[in-house]
Image (cartoon, rainbow, N blue to C red; front, side):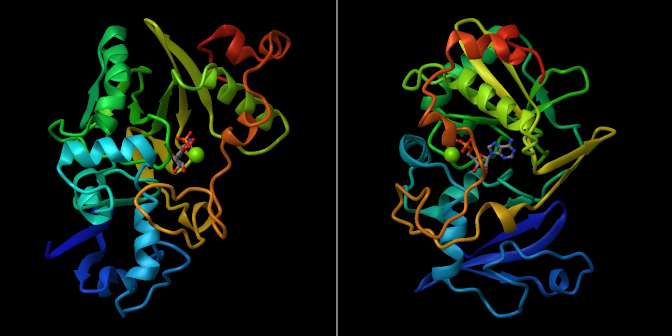
Length: 291
Ligand SMILES: Nc1ncnc2c1ncn2[C@@H]1O[C@H](COP(=O)(O)OP(=O)(O)O)[C@@H](O)[C@H]1O
Ligand SMILES: [Mg+2]
């Protein structure tokens, strides 16, 4: 691979290039000179020199998912799961934060493909473990960290769930229930609601059910939407700024890293809300209402 561009919306931020020591990143000089330019991470301040692999690669690897999802993606794309840059070239169009890899990011909703019927969404959810992030579908390119299946989606003004296409931004994250983690949707909804009531800033969430499958729909905190336009925000400076080892597999929660607050923190102590708790939280009780 010669080089891979990284964009903030339509602007080139820099280029990923691979040399014998591995993949590195070089900011575009026009980007550095731009008013309002931001670094891709606090570990990589704006400068004209190439940023070496030992700093850049852990950041890039953390845009990818983990465990089973990463393994499946590698198989489907015919790439090693350690091939961070190869994988990002295929699925890095919509990532955590403001950056789009390989293709410019759009801000408009024109390219949102509505998921028409509930059974279509149920089929998408059922297929996700075998087809993480809908990989291979024409015009779809997205990646999110984490071990659980999830999908970056957009919710249009009629409340319809859509698949973002051709660089258009996602606005929400859809996290289906997990056969391996019973009650995960209710638990996550409970923890986020509890956090919110404790005045901890949390994304807006709703829960839903399609056929046999329940899901959590969380508004993205790294998007700002108004009037059918969505700007991408770069939260990198607080979501991930520590060194994380890359071994192609287990990278999360390692020493020195700062991860976003997620209900996983709570799931260690609260396996599933009891009935008592369930009845005190409207989103769980109503099974689909915004909280
Ligand atoms: N509401 C959200 N807004 C923006 N990004 C999110 C949101 N929820 C999750 N993410 C992104 O997805 C990643 C994984 O989410 P997480 O909830 O930790 O999933 P998992 O349960 O698989 O670990 C986060 O590190 C973050 O980048
Ligand atoms: Mg997580």
